[in-house]
Image (cartoon, rainbow, N blue to C red; front, side, top):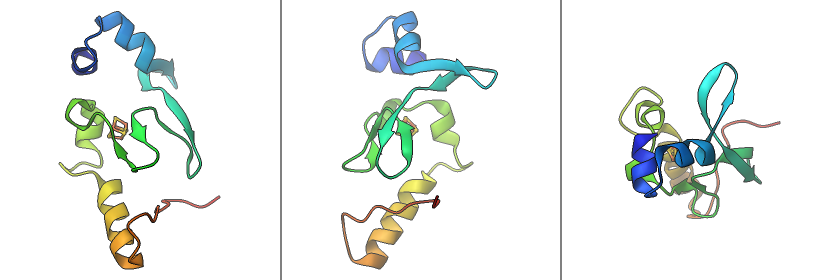
Length: 96
Ligand code: SF4
């Protein structure tokens, strides 16, 4: 939260209110927004370029997920774009 507040030059309490909410017994859950592919997605995700807009200020949970230093979804997305020979292809991780 401190990293996000610093990144956006906001007081800690404002950043906390603006970017997170309490849910599922957790103090901080990132707020989300609509996404045509996943329904809801992190508010910091660029839904056109399919990447993080605050990469250098991303929260610790994002830095450690999925337990490595790299973003698993990004690697998957780039792999699928190469495989499909389509730089705009959006890979889904689940189907409804
Ligand atoms: S890396 Fe984290 S902050 Fe960035 S878009 Fe993904 S979930 Fe959001």
